[in-house]
Structure formats: C-alpha cells, structure tokens
Image 1 (cartoon, protein in one colour):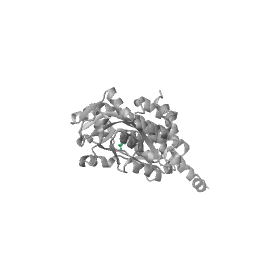
Image 2 (cartoon, protein in one colour):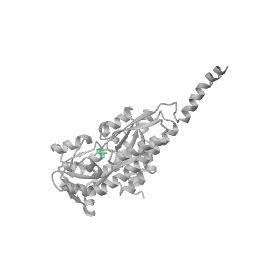
Image 3 (cartoon, protein in one colour):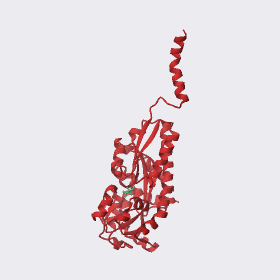
Image 4 (tube, helix red, strand yellow):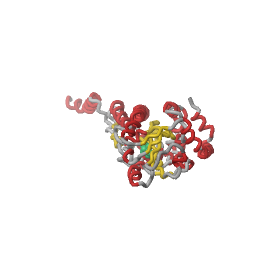
Amino acid sequence: MIHRIARQARPLLIAAAMAVLGLSAQAQTTLRVGFGLGLDAHYGLGAVQMQKLVAERMGGRFKLELFPSFQLGGEREMTEGAQLGTIDMVITSTGPVGNFVPDTLITDIPFLFRDYSHARSVLDGPIGQSILDKCPAKGLICLAWTENGFRHMTNSKREVKAPEDAKGLKIRTMENQIHMQAFRALGVLPTPMAFPEVFNALQTGTVDGQENPIGVIVSAKLNQVQKHLTLTGHVYSPGLVLMAPAAYNKMSEADRKAITQIAREGARITRQRVEQLERDGVDQLRAAGMQVRALNVAEKSGFQNALNPAFAEFAKRFGQANIDAIRNAK
Ligand code: EAX
C-alpha cells in the first residue's frame, strides 16, 4: 500500500523539487546575437546589458550568446541570417536593412534629424514604431531602435571643408541606396561595401575615404588608414535590434514582451556609449594624428544645399509630408 502511494506521489515530488529549485521542465534556449565592433563599443555594451537582463528576467528559459566583431558576418549578411533563422538576434545599423525593409530607408536621409534627442524621440515614438511594425511582413522582427550615431567623413587625400573638396573622391558607403544617392549628388563616387572590408580597402587605396560615427572610427582604429576627418554630421545613423521570426514566434507572449523591453534597455546603454565615444573620440583621433576639421554653420549648410537634388528625389520617394513630419517633430 505504502509503496503504491509513494510510486504515485513520485512525479509530484519531482515537479515540486524542480519548482523549488527554479528548474523549469523547459530546456534553456540559447539565442545567438551577432553585431559589429568590439564588446566595449556601443553595440557591444548594449548587448552585454541585454545578456544580463535576459539572465535576470527570463527565468533560465533563455540565455544570450554574444558574437561581437562581425564574427557572424557583415551587417547585411547578419540581417539575412536573422531572416533565415540562422542567427537569432542582430544589432546593426540601419545601413543595409533598407534592402530588406524599405520602410527603414526614410531614417537614412541626410540632415533629417537635428540632434540625438530629436532622433531618439522620433524613433521611440509613433513614427518609429510604425516603421518597426513593417518588419514582420518582410520576414524580420524589429524589436527596438538602437543607435550608431551621427556620421562624419574621413579620407586619405585632402582636407574637405566644402562639397567641392569632396568631388571625385571614392568614398565607401554602406549598402544603402539613400546614402549612395546623396553622395552622388555631392559629386562623390560612392562605393558600397560591407564594413569588415573597409579597413583593408582604405589601406590599399581601393577607396579614398569612408563615413561613420566617431565611435565606429575610434573602435575600428580607422585613424591608422585615414588622415583627414571632417565633422560633417551629414547623417544620423540609427541602429536596430532585430530578431529572427523563427526564434521570436516560439516565445510565449510574456517572453516576447520581455525580450522587447530588454532590447529597449540595451539600446539605452548603447546610446549612452555613442555619446561618450563621440565626446572623447575626436580628441583621441586628433591625438592619434588625424587632421580634424569642424564645420561652422555656413559650411555645414553648404553640404546641405549641395544635397538639394537628392532631397527632391527623396521627397518623390517618401512623400514630403512624411519627411517633414520627422524633420519638424519636436
Ligand atoms: O554599424 O557599415 C557601417 O559603416 C556601419 O556604420 C558599421 O558597420 C557600424
């Protein structure tokens, strides 16, 4: 009699023990997270924060395994990996994402955002959310906006303080149609390329220059292969935290909400790092021997005016009202 009761109670006792030990019957799922630059750069710090929060909040059901420094490929390749489900999460600039989700391209228009707080408030608000909502139909989950930073131009040939100085330079751009259109309007020869190839292309002279936020220039040590830095701030480069639908759709509603909130909190750390790298980075690059050229208001307007032919094309593509809704947002 006693044996029979013990036998029947056994599964209950095991379940109770597991509950007490916090062990769920569900095995732990490892989510692979790919991103560029080192762990101490802007995406890396955000990724470390996400890893910590997943461990704290997702009850042992999930853990993040981080793959920094483009180990899983360039941003376009990683974004494709998220679509295919071979990579579970990606932290990337919007650069190549427009090839998958064209609705993100409006955020890549030069001189669209006034400053960081303007960009973050638009992207974290209804306009930004409406763009994130376009991702699932294109085979991607866009959990949150993160940040790459305002982009500046570098080259190995000459000081650039006006658009005419840039004419004829071969400048590497991201694989982004909007950026390429803008650089063509400046009379620059845009050469689209995945970031992992950029250092070597600059070193061998395949391209004369590139453009990136200070944090990227510093983290990738581009001062070793670039002489001139012009603080054009010509584009605000948003970032995105992407997730593979294959991984996301397996999650409970509660876990989807949790990972989305965690992505937002990781983005907060990334944004702090972007501003810190930008504050400290220009002096670091100058000390490392780069000729740094800040632009006054008139010189910056010179670049903006030179882009007018491209702005006309952007208005046709995205609608002037949509561009103004972003540009004029408070
Ligand atoms: O996201 O490709 C680029 O220029 C990006 O700014 C870089 O990969 C960081």
